[in-house]
Image (cartoon, rainbow, N blue to C red; front, top):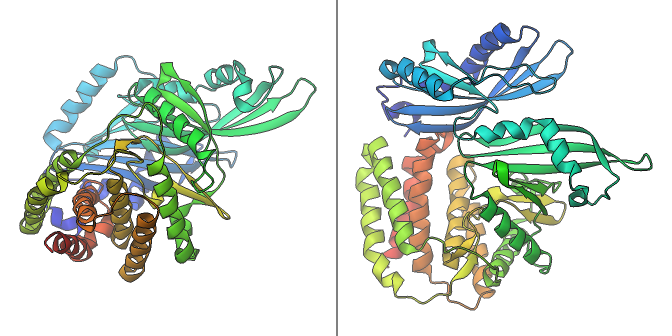
Length: 464
C-alpha cells in the first residue's frame, strides 16, 4: 500500500499539504507577507490526522531566521477541507472565534490567530491559538509563568528569597486540540546575588483530566524512588488547575529509540522487562480501571472498520483477524489474572536514556488492568519498528522473545502465549490503522508485506 493508493477524491490538495518541501515554499510566501524580516529555513511535518474525504489536519514546525540572524520556530496547524466546504468552514470558524487577536510573544512576530488559504482549501492556525484549548495562550504568557513560579520557589528547591529573572520556552510536542508540551528555561536571582537556572516541562490538556494525570504521575514517581530496578521518572512539580496543566522536572537524556541501534540488546531488553514486571507488581492508590478484553476488542474492531474503508484490498485478511479475536475472547476471559498497575502505553518511544540510566515518561494511561496487555503492547510496538523504521525483523524478533521470557521469570502469574498473541494482534490492527490515519509513508509501504506477515503469525499462534 502506498500514499497514492488511498484514492482520495475530495481533498484535492492532500499531496501538497503533506509535502514538507512544497509547504516550505508556501510558508515562505506567508511569512514574507506578515514578517518581512524573517526568512523560512525549513518546514517539518510533525503530525498528520487524516479522515478520508472529510479533512486532513497537518502540524508544521516552521524554522525561520529574523533580521538579527536569530533562529525562530513556530507551530502552524492547517486543516484541509473538501473544496465545496472549505470557505463555509472558515466562515464558521471565524464566527465561533469572535474577536480573537494575535498574541504577543517576546522576540517573535505576532501571527494572526488563523487564516484561510483558498488555494489549498485550508484553514491555518498559529500556535498558541487552538480552538479546543483557548487556555493554551496562558502557557506562553511569560508574566503568568513568572508570577506562578515566584509564588512557590520551593517547588524548584529554592527559598522564598529567590525570584525569576528571565523565562523563555521551547516548543516540544503538540497535538492540536488535545495536548501540548513546552520546555521552560528559568533564570533565578538569589537573595545574596546568587544565580541559578531551572529547566522543566509543562503538559497542557484539552480537559480537566489533567488533575488525574498529575496525581497518578506523582504516585508513579514516589514508587520509582523506592525501587532500584524500576526506571527513573522525572519529578512532578505542580498542577495548574486553571489551565489544565502540570509541570515536571527535566530529565536530561536522549530518546531511547534513537539510541537503540548502538546499544547491547542482550542487556537492554531484559532490563526493560524487569522494570515492567516491577511496575506490575506494585500498588498505587487512586488508579482507575483500565481497558479489558472487551474494550480491546471493540477498539480493534472500530479501527479495523476504518482501516478496511481506507484499504479495501486488505478487507478479507483484517476481517478474518477480527473474527478470530472475537472467537477467542470468551475462552481467554475465563483465565484468572490479577488486576495489576499497568502503564497502558509502554513503548520504547516513551523512554529516555542517559549513559546507563533509563527513564520512563507519559503516564496518562496508567491504570489497573491486565498486565499481559502491557507486555503485548510493548512487543507489538517493537515489531512495528520494522514498518516505521525499517529495522530487521530477525533482530526485533530476538528482542521480543528475550523481553517476554525475562518478564515471565519475574512475575508470579502465568504468561499465556495465546493471551499475548490475542492482545498483540489487536494492537497491530490499531497500529496499522494509525499508519494510514497519520499518513506514515514509510509504514504504508510495508503494510501489505511486513504488516500482514506479523498479523498472520499472531493469528496462527491463536489457532494452535
